Length: 130
Image (cartoon, rainbow, N blue to C red; front, side):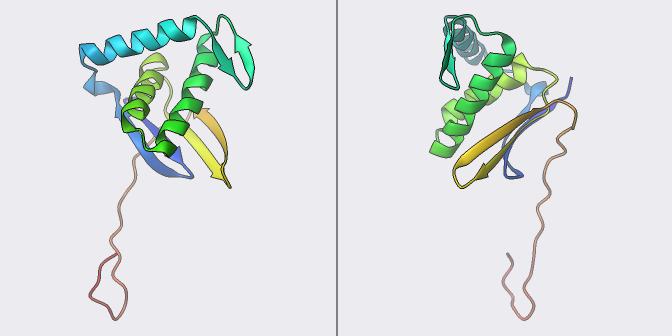
């Protein structure tokens, strides 16, 4: 199992989840309720699925997560990120490409997320750091 799971949009990390941290009981209960609601059926790409499997649920959660990130809804984005990280322990990244408002995504199981490194730049002839 990979400890880190990350959501990246156009190569930039939006959320990181450390599986070693665990979740409080109330958040675990919320994830169980998510499972129960999805077990009752979901709509995926316009199709109603009465009894979705784990893969279909993961696609549904990933698409919802992307929308929550774009809407700035941190609470739901965090919950849906937690769902992916806990229900798919081998998942390492959710990579989203957003081109002109059209999103495509990949669930990445074979490439570890290494984190991003901040680089401090100083413009020549300037004492301003960017």
